[in-house]
Image (cartoon, rainbow, N blue to C red; front, side, top):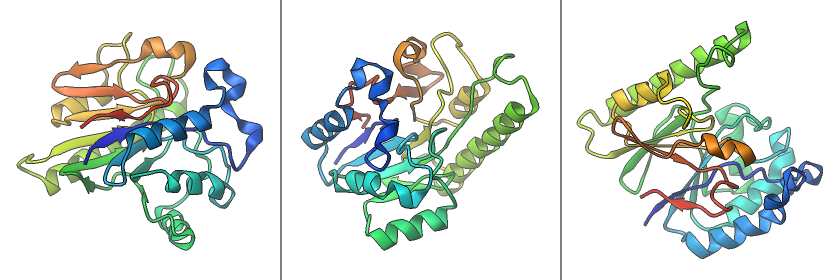
Amino acid sequence: MAIYALADLHMCLSCPDKSMELFGSSWNGYISKIKDNWERMVTDEDTVLVSGDISWATYIDKAEEDFRFLSELPGRKLLSRGNHDYWWTTIKKMEDFFDEKQFTNLEFIRTNIIEADGCLITGTRGWMIETKESLEGTDNRKIYDREKLRIKMCIDKLSEQDPEHSKKHILMIHYPPITAKQGFTEFADMMADAGIDICVYGHLHGKAHKKAFEGDYKGTRFVCTSADYLGFAPIRIL
């Protein structure tokens, strides 16, 4: 059993006009690349963390083909929200939809805790990291502060469930909580101070790959899992 991660699938089977192939040659045939690499690497006993930007569909019922594609791939998949997941609604509505369609190996992460392979996994969407430019304007500040509260909720629930930290703690987030150009952030400090073992994130594409921070920050390992960053292949994190 292993834990893999791959974010930013940007699936478009349900809405082909939104294909990421418009954003550069590296995305050509990306759905087939994801399928081939996934099936080559992942088994049904493994877990894959998908940290947002899963489907281009606007409503969950319009994303059925995308979720069917994902469900038919090997492994258990834990899904958290990205900035383009407009289909995302309440957990109950999404779980009811998955139950109806019998997508039994797809589960949602949103400040809840799911155990997989001896690890405790939680997560949230996150937001742009705190630079003067990114937080200008009331809306940005409100969203940032709300996501900071959600990260705290994730941390508190991990602590409640595993006060002795006897298991690995993994936090999924979509926006990068730290970058190569910004060596510290509130989000990263919160995770490190709480003893988060691994944080997986996505969101960075193309030229933005140079911003990716990979490695240890104050004891927390950060892993960029954007699909194009990884060559459309899941990365094993444990």
